[in-house]
Image (tube, rainbow, N blue to C red; front, side, top):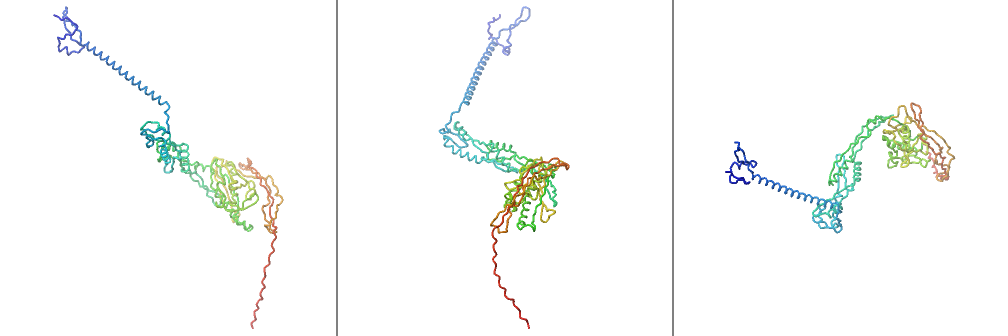
Length: 551
């Protein structure tokens, strides 16, 4: 008998082997074919269909779950976008206006540690401003190193506070907020302060130079001296250092500034290579009177010699850098009694000699002027004036008068190297007992070989002084007279500097023209009657005693 296939699994027959097989491998029932071969009949597997249906349902459930998750994520993302848009719109909108007069701070609001809860701006502003002013006045940045020690205050930097902005921010903000003010500085003010510190605290370099040892003959012997480097603030880095400290809230701190080494502008090699005598001039003066001089002259002459030598000492060892302008009055100083000058004759009113402090310094300035003219290619005379009375110690046209705060001798070094001035005085070889020589020597870049410059004057015209001018005075007795001004002709003089090359004049350089105004003799004669002398009583002599002869 056989069982008719019903389409349902046979639940009545089970074997252990069928239960252990995989679902993909269902149990088979065997039958013999007509050919003797065994044929297999594969029955439908109802368990596999059920499992497949379950898997399909699971997949569908998972798909629905994924759709739900994606939908939720989409909604969340949309919500984030909406919030972002709202925040963006709010940030771009105008802030709500704050009434600084009536508005009150919310609870828990602090500015610089001060509790402002429930208070108005008017209630807290005085204390906030007082605290801020105190803090600003106590800003102190110290620059300290082995070479420099200086301080920079808030006032130096024009420091200011953003207190007003912070007050508005705190008033319009939420509760439980803490705010701090910040200080800002004026960059220009800070730069000026650091420049000032650099000027007072830095050490300038010392250029190489030459000291001259003058022998008794007046011949200078150079002694070369090496220069020394200096130092100063690195201004730019120091400004940045201070600004960093302020931005970091370090209002009381010590900073170590960067220093820069400043090398001498003139090296020893440059001095040695460009140190040659290019000008020299000497004039003679008296330092002691003679028997022919009046008593007043004998008293004045030493004073004048003193002033000549004092002025020479002042201009000695002067160094004029390339392009620099040099002033006699600036170097020598005011000729006053307080400055140690003595009274001697000087020109007053154009034609009269009077006593004045510093009388005689014009001889030193004149000597310098003539030495400078020999260095003509390397100098430019900016200021120079003649005397009104021709000098006795130099040709007309070659003098250079000076007067405190009035008349000056000024020149500029137009060469590419320093100029050196040396001045000294020695005994005159012919008049050792009463006269001396003052000499000025100019050193600098050597002139081209074979070249030199010499001064020359030409008297263009001369006019007679004119008739004497004589006046009477009751201040003098009859027969007495007083010379007010000596008779002097009028002169017009032209000055040249002749350029020589190998002994031949190659150029005649016109310097200028001077006019010395002449004047007639001016004197006073006395008209005051000479008093008659009153004879004195002559005592009667007593008779001589005659001794009695001895017997």
